[in-house]
Structure formats: structure tokens, C-alpha cells
Image (cartoon, rainbow, N blue to C red; front, top):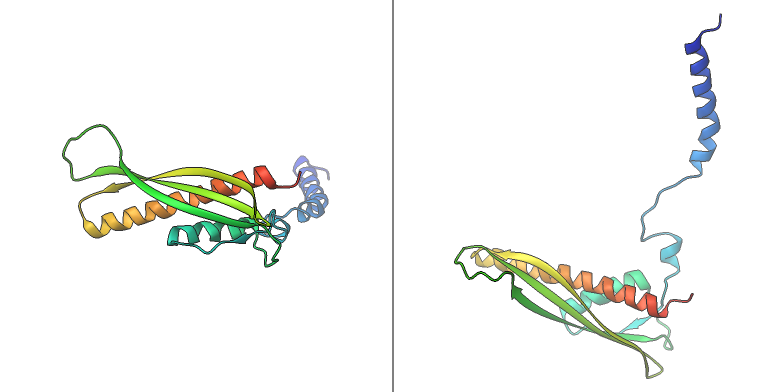
Length: 166
């Protein structure tokens, strides 16, 4: 005997059987892997880092843009500067003060000795000082690294916008 629930079950099973091959073709993957990562956008050589923060920038750029061992590849040199400011206009005494770190990256890209790209980017990261020396030092170091990673991303985007093949 025919019933609406039996027909609905049969329709659901038919849809599931027909949809399975379509859904099997779909996949998810991390943004920084697979074909996009195996073919880097720019193959660059990097100058020797002069500080821990410059090393972070070079590592981030090499991961995202690629690294070349070819002697003819363009050489990217980046210098990173850090400055710290206190946030706000108040001079009220409080054990907690808001601070921010500004990371400034200046780069030069050379190919065969000729400069093909220069630029400057900045990024900001905030943190708080509480009067506890160890915690304040760690908070400042973490803010410096966070601002440095953000400025590396800004440099990456600027280089891609300027130099990536269309």
C-alpha cells in the first residue's frame, strides 16, 4: 500500500544516492597548501636578517612568496624598525597603561644590481603594561612579533600587487 511517508523516504534515498558523487567531488583544504603553495607567486632570494624581527619577516615572505636558490633571482632586503607609544591623552595614574608598538618595514628588491622595487609599510599592535616586569616584557615582545607579522603581510601584498604576473 502506498503512503506519503514511504514515498518521502524513497525520494530522500534517491536524492542521497544521486547527490553522493557530486558531493564526493568537493573538498576542503588549507589556504597555504596544495597547488597554490607548490607554485610560489614570486621566487626571491633574501638578504641575511640583521635582527630577530627581520628574520620573522623573511620567514613569512619565504613561506608565502617562495624562496629561490637561483643566482639570477631578485634579492629582497628588508629592514624592520620598532617604536612604542602610549595610547591616549590622559596622564591619570593607573597601574594599567595601554601601549602600542608600530613596526615599520622598508624594503628594496634588486635584480642584477638594479633596484626594481622599493617601499615602506607599517603595522600596529596594542598591549597593556601592568607594572609587573616579566609580564610587561612578554606583552611587549608579543606585540612586536604580532606587528612584525602584520607588516610582513603588508609587504607581501605590496610586492604581489607590483610584481606578480598578470
